[in-house]
Length: 126
Image 1 (cartoon, rainbow, N blue to C red):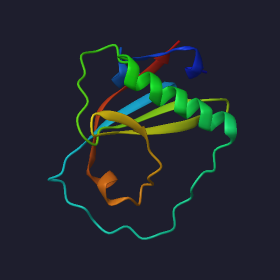
Image 2 (cartoon, rainbow, N blue to C red):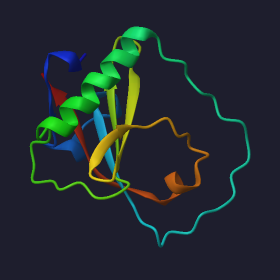
Image 3 (cartoon, rainbow, N blue to C red):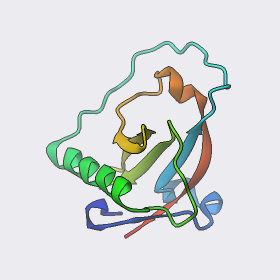
Image 4 (cartoon, helix red, strand yellow):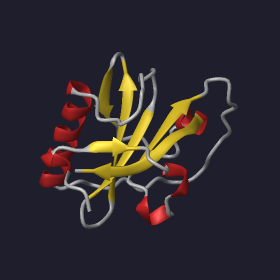
């Protein structure tokens, strides 16, 4: 399992050939022309503990300070990145807004997330 606090690289090598359990990160891009449909339900909002919040803060700092990707990538507004970490396979979410990666706490019920399309996926290398 990856330890993001010790430095990491988001590797895309054969990401399309990885088993679902091997995928450690997912990058999606927003298509504003994609239709938004109504979703009904009540989202579950996970409450992070202190160490998970710290890890998320350190990860977003790394994303903004250096190139964490192993491929040529220029973030665009509303790009959405999820990174799996921790013993319980916690997925951390980040959204690119106004030139910076920011911690994201939206849910699948957030209308803009319906417009996301898969861009890349891979594994996390320490």
